[in-house]
Length: 491
Image (cartoon, rainbow, N blue to C red; front, side, top):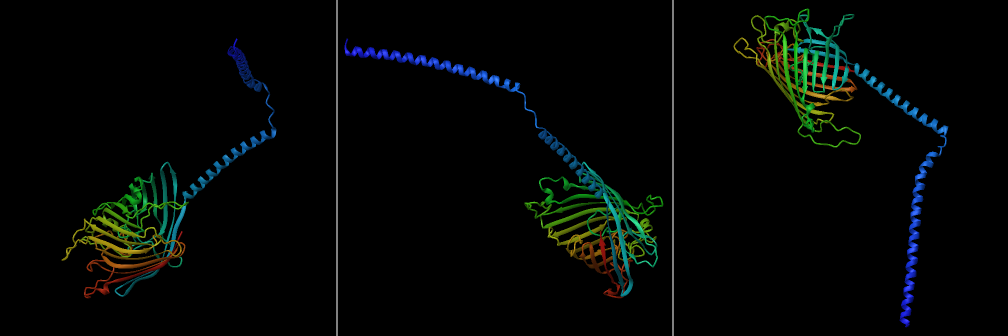
């Protein structure tokens, strides 16, 4: 045997021993692992059973009582919140159910015609009313309004619905009070409103057509299309609405319209209003504030309307014309008004500095009577046109301390252009002139006011304010000067 054969034998024997040891160890380790896995599985399976079998420790009585108290406190808090919310809703409902409003005023009224004192007296006025919301839910609302006011009569003893200022009474003399406003209105989704009763004029245009103290008696409807606009369009067009009114004036003792040969005294009219804000822009509101509805400093306002009325003779026998003893309209030989009063109107207004407290306004209001008949005589005029224009600077509503408003207006009203029972107390018809006025709130709700008016008859051959002055080329002696100044407290 060589040395090489010996080495090979030794190597083969060692390899067999190593292989044997390795296989035995591997088998042992595998058996140990399997045994460990089986034991672990058995232990994990037995743990839930042992846990279920173990009895739970008894609960702490203090902790249980604390949980019960917390639950009772939560329920009590929920009941209190519900009761408080109900009380707040009831308080708001009661507050909205009735709210008292009105004003008390004193003024001096002087009228001088042809350098002759015609009227020179102190006067007073009282408005006392209540309004409220009787029902509001599911987009529907029902409101009411009732107002008492002082009223006067003309020289013929007829009530004057356009004049609420009375001369100071004698000591112990009775006061005249009447319900000049009583209405119920129903609103649906703030789009459609129906009004029934005696209500103020819903039309734009000041007091040229309807005096602020005059109230229509019948039905009124309003349709607001701007409520339906989406995407901010209502910020460019803040108002787009239709106004309608149906009313009657003269009636018998049963409250039924009293027809006569002069016509049925019923008024029917409507107006379309359209506002446009061309400088509108999107503005992010400050934190904690509400974005303004309109941001434009410039706004154009327009109103176009049609109004029809027949029965002036019946009305003139039931209500007075104001501060004049008889009508200023053109009459025929039998004393009837020569007009059916089919009126077309256009109102334009420009509002500057809209978002400022004191803004600037300029307006024009024109009226044309399509039903006017020519007057008798050489002229043969229809007397069918009227307009007023003016400017004002100040607050829209003079109520807070040091609020003010300055105003100038010029007016031109021919004899048959308007119904004198309805319009401004000091204008009527057959008149032209101008007026300056000022109002200042010296305290909240306490306002000083004054006006200075110069006017004359538009046609000196017809009745109206001012004295006829045919021999005066300038007709200055035929002019009238009216001064009104006073104070009123609103609440």
